[in-house]
Length: 247
Image (cartoon, rainbow, N blue to C red; front, side, top):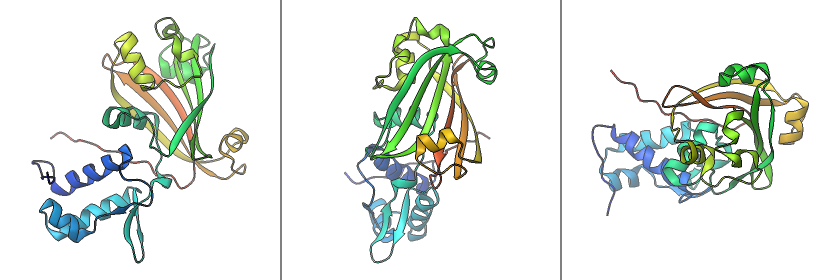
């Protein structure tokens, strides 16, 4: 059955969302061709100007690029995934990462919470906290490194947080299963920065090279911080966000 435009979301956004979801599910992979504006106009029964806006939006989000003689192709090499991106992805597609990415959990341990982490989680400084460190790879190339922090009291109901094996349903899905806590909102902070010695080791880049550094608070339905995360991405990786603004 041919796709159909639904109201009231603007038609171009519906098409963008459809193609974005195809990319996230791996149905469209890096280098695959996106239909031309003329073809999108025909398939979706939308104006040519609307179809052109679809392609412009996908390029602006860093999901596609123009190739002379070919057209618009998928460009997943520059896409970045923050902690909340992983949670959204697994709910939309059943996958935490795109098909060409995977993560390696470097460590999972109980430590004394540093002051900044304790403040973020709403616990006492030096109180027990769970720390999970990972590096994300695209193929065999490291593209980002992150550390997730959780209240140490979660160790009893959620012991897998202290294991280095991947949690297939994601940490948020796992915590929802064992504790009933459901993520509700997220807050992100990002800043351009220079790679530290640790970043250089994790990402395989020179010390001082440009990186994107981020912090993330994932908040449950009771308004409590479920996870605090810190992450760093290599240069050239875009992050995309969607917002709904209520009048």
